[in-house]
Length: 166
Image 1 (cartoon, rainbow, N blue to C red):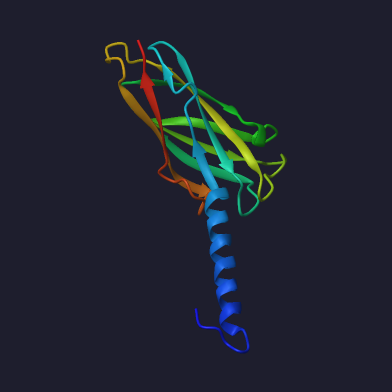
Image 2: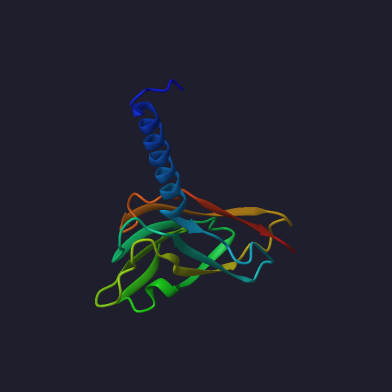
């Protein structure tokens, strides 16, 4: 890097580094996450699929997203509010078609999720129904279609892997 007598080049380089660092931090924290708990189970077992945020750039008072899963491997059982939405007026997840659940929620008179907050929004419950599948068969739970307060957050089209054990 060429040094200027007035330091403009150093100042621009420092500003560029700060800007790129802010972008990298936002990419890590302004995300929606999906996981499967436990990540391995036998047919007949119940698994939970928490949908969480790792911070948010803005307050969230409503959100929506889709969750896809292998219909031959799982039966959708229901949804439970997460700690971040415990006092919200409406949090629900309804089957759209085999292998897809649509989640929607709004705070109503409940507490909006503050910017920068992290935690679980909703937990989906499934039963493993793949009795004829071989041990080690895997399936993915994927999230997509973010709307309202989740629009623009990272993690769309993220998936969590599940493995069948006998």
